[in-house]
Image (cartoon, rainbow, N blue to C red; front, side, top):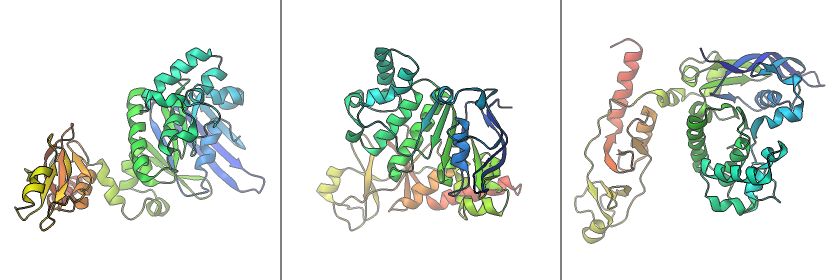
Length: 364
């Protein structure tokens, strides 16, 4: 059984209007795991997060972190003991990137040179070039600013990291990159992370466990993401997860049974010289066999952008998305180095999905 790091015991937050933002919340958050709070606006997920570091004080109930009740620690000391990442990175505009990252260590009395050295190391940890350390926040993209925000939260090596909708203000492509970066960091660092989002897809991608909050600040379901998708606790959770929860559930199903077929390939030079003489879809690859797009019948030398890529070990959801997003109807399978391993078809992916479903239901 996992060890608890954070515990809520009958916690309620009630405002002067009499309305409860959080209503009798009892839950245990596992040490070294990512726990995601998700739900519609006004359901109490952010309030619950902020009660952990006393940015919001509960009306009643107790919260403990590492076995110590949070009210027994001065609020400022408690906050410096935890990392905190918010929606807008919250960087100080007049300070360089390095000085922003070094903020908490400096507050904790770490000498400036040592704090800056730690900040420089963290740039690499969060996937930023060391040269960016001298820049100011306004000289960075939104995604870079959020990475700096994560680095700042990690600077004092806190055991707990609180993240309040940190990726919601960036575009979908950058958001996906940041999600994968967070998962990579977690594999290396094993922090206790509490992450707030309103996006059920983000919750199921990131969460070891997911807490779905309902209106009125009540905890509607708290379970592994696969269980929430497979067996919503009530109509509210089913409605919030959405009618396409079956598709999302494929994100937890392995793709071992999918057949990868040989791909018909062509290079840009061959395409420019002879066109698409084969009269059928061909995969355009560079000299290292990395996919560049598709050449379709009657398209001449033009290259049609491809869909998403499928890698060995990916889930059935990734496999189906690769096949359905491809203009040719063939999903592109690549190896660990990004080189073409072959192609997959939507029909065969769907057959594996159906077989997997029947096995789970005990039909086969």
